[in-house]
Picture 1 (tube, rainbow, N blue to C red):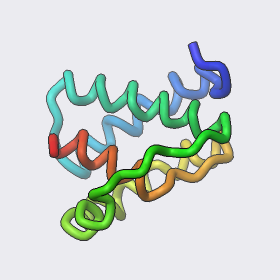
Picture 2: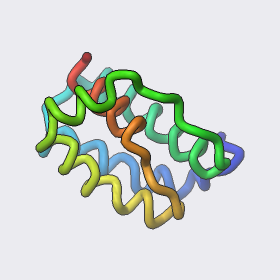
Picture 3: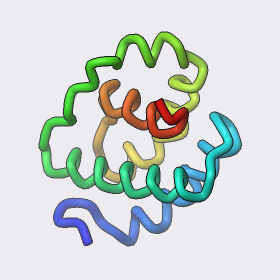
Picture 4: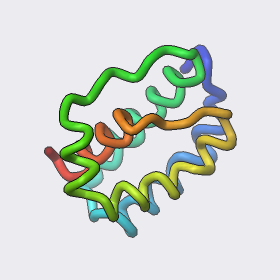
Length: 103
């Protein structure tokens, strides 16, 4: 249960988005998919609350190294951003890439 994010919307949108990540960015184990799903759900809740995303000290390095995946990730997250009226900052995108690529 989340205090700020609508869990019904998350359950409707998030599984398809994670499946698209799996198909278009990098194949993931089921454990990684579940972890990523939970991470993104918590991130949406945090962003909806107005709380800051923790800084990723490797943000620039990760985004530069995985530029194509970063662009795909940005595009694939648009439905969540629109549904919840949020914008995923680059620090969070770097965190998601770290989970996907097990960095």
